[in-house]
Image (cartoon, rainbow, N blue to C red; front, side):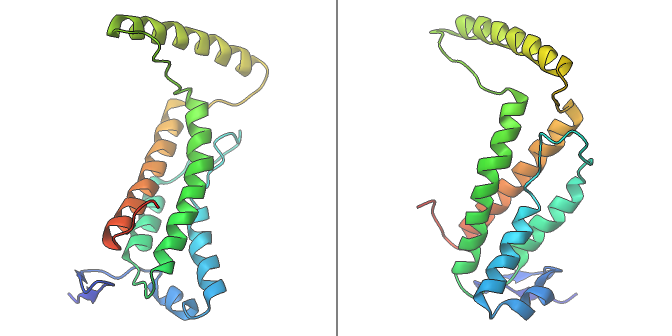
Length: 171
């Protein structure tokens, strides 16, 4: 089995399958950035779309492994990817959160108050969801919600790996 050398001299047992294609366009900044951004846009899922396809989590794992496994020459490349990831997380992940109704009201002073508050909030949300469903709005089922959450976590993990490998911060 052959080994491939990465950006910091580390050895990998595999090479990103998108690497040969990326190597062809790497020299032209605009094409390179467009390519990297378009890869990340694959994660930009429309959670409010009613007739969506069932996402294949393995495909998104494959894409994330390629993002992390490519050999970048400049620091601008991972920064471009992280910027694109942040845009997707700001839109898709936030839409997913609003669809899942994950807003938690922590007004209570102790655990019992929080528990009671969460129960009444969930009851309100269920009633609101029933009303919205009767009006024809779309709601994700539990299986789709879990897949979308998993895909967003894969993207978030890829971002963290890039930050760690290239010693980048959020600033």
